[in-house]
Structure formats: structure tokens, C-alpha cells
Image (cartoon, rainbow, N blue to C red; front, top):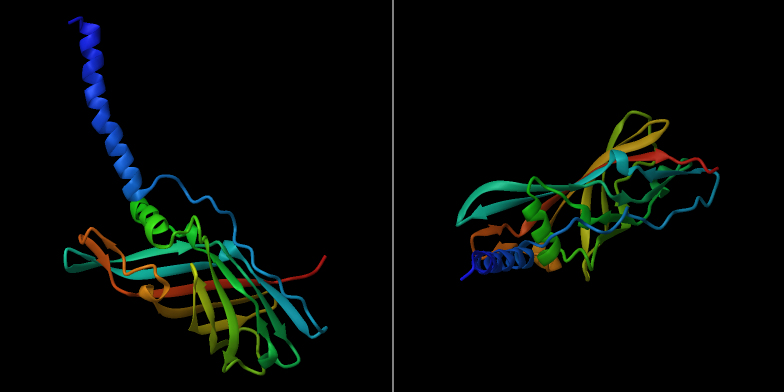
Length: 230
């Protein structure tokens, strides 16, 4: 057999498992980066001259998830992922701060990144299905304990109750919020805990080797800048 033919056959035999491996890898983990763009939320409009609009600045804001990972029955680490693709408006009523409004908050979950690209791709592909459902949407319904008066530089705590939609499931969620107002921005943090099973995104199980807890902590660090219409 000519050497050229033999080499061709050999390379072909080697190439088949390589190609099969690539296809299996793609099916298991998925290739590529997220395709969706920045989050966009419905905007609020001031109804009176006493309402001041603040708009979440994605460059200074971040949503973080934290979930315990279990390797072959041994809980050994906490997976942490973050996204800064967040949008939303807040209207502060300076005549009566208790009448302030928080608009719909949109979070681009397809942009969640952790310290493992393999984890991120698997979550996007198999659990969040974020190519189909790229956004989580929170619609506030009630502010509990929001102060009637606010002093610049003072931290206030309150609860924010609303409906959180992930994929096709909507459930009521309560965030514990701490916020501080200054002349140019509203800054704060909000935390809550949800169950992955309630939103059909977990608990995550990869061939029984890596699993996660059902509960996941969500932390939202935000800066909403005072908005001046042009």
C-alpha cells in the first residue's frame, strides 16, 4: 500500500474519534459565548415635580448567585456567578418617601459568569435554558418599612416584595434591602433565597458526580444614578 494512502487512512481513523469527541463535548457542555445583549427594562415616568427618577447603572451594579456544590456526596465548595447586565428604574417621592415606586427590574441571566466556563455553559444550556429565556424579571408589588423621611448618607432597611419570573415560572419573592441616598445616587444591597426546583432550574445534577443544593442565595449590589432628562 502506498505510504500516502496509508497515512490518509491512519489520519482518518484518528480523526473519527476526535470529531466524535468534539461533538460529544458540545452536546455535554455547549460551545460559544452568550448571544444576548444588555438588559432593558420598562422605564418609569415622573407623575409630579416631587418625584425624582433614579436609574440602575449596570457599570456599578451586580447580581450574584451562590449555591453549594457537592462532589460525589461530599460538599466541598460554593459556586458563585455574577452578571452586571441589569436594568430598572426607581422613583423617589420627595414629598412622602413612603410613596416611592420601584419599577420592573430585568436581569440578563445568560450573562452569568463564574470561575468555570464549563459550569457556565452547562447551566446556560441545560438548566437556565438562557438562549430561550435570557432574562429573569422582578416586578415589585410592595415596599414594607420604607421610610417616610430620608436623610442623605443614612442607611435604611426595608423589605421589597414582588414577583420573580425565571423561564416560565413566576413566584413571590421578598428581598431584604439596605439603601443609602446621596445627592447623585441611590446605593444599596438586596438579598433573598430561592429554590431552584421551584423555577425548574435545578437542583443541578451532572451524571450524579456533581450536584448542588436546592436553595440558592441571590445578592444584588446596586447603584441607581439620579436621572436628569435632556
